[in-house]
Image 1 (cartoon, rainbow, N blue to C red):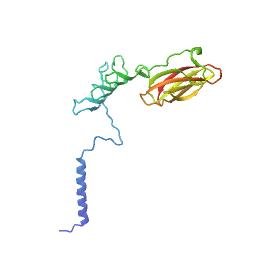
Image 2 (spheres, rainbow, N blue to C red):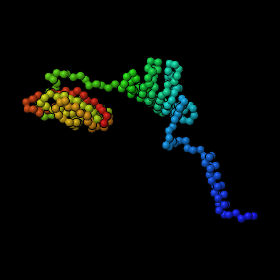
Image 3 (cartoon, rainbow, N blue to C red):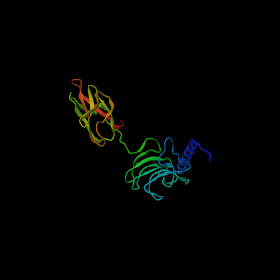
Amino acid sequence: MAAIPLDLLDRIRSLERQVRALMGSANTRPAMDRVKGGNVVISDGGQLAVRDSEGEKGAELLYIGKSPEVFPNRPDGTGQSGFMLRRDDGSVAMAVRTDAPDIEPRQSVKIFDGRSNAIVADDTAGEGLARPYLAYPLPVPVNTARWETTTSTEWTTLHSSTGIVQHPALRCLILTTEGGEARLLVNGVPVGPAGPGPLDFTAPVGLPFDARATFEVQARVTTPGATVGCSPRALYGVKS
């Protein structure tokens, strides 16, 4: 038998190991629960669904696609393409769809409470919000003689109201007559600057979300012998 160099045998063993490794990797299914450095594309009428249990009968907690989960169909019978998010009790928490395609073809974005009431929705006919309804500042007297007034040089509360904090900041507009200045207090603490009118500013409200707040508009005389009047024209919550 001819002598076989040892390095050749080593190479054959190395090739055998590489072939076994390749066969093993070919039969190994890659992980399907992660996407790195790429995109997930669902096309041709496909849907994305998350169910609360296995099988086709599981309740849809999250659904993106067409009918039957996004309903009702449009008048010509075609399904809507939309979005549905449900709570674990089956009630809809958020949806992108139209409830009446025959009379309101444009879809809206809605957030629902636990009793299926739409508490937040955009307006499908124009722009902005459909819900919730937000109050505008109430019209007040234009005649300065009918404004609340003070002759004191000390800060005097002329207007007061209460509310529940829903925003991190507020916008305030106060008009004052000559000879004095005004300021805003929230729970007894001055918020924003003090000064003659028009006093127009945006400032942090200084209270946590859902806190009860008492708003006071105060005024004082800065010119001896004057009478200062003030009229709040805007006070509402805004983003930070």
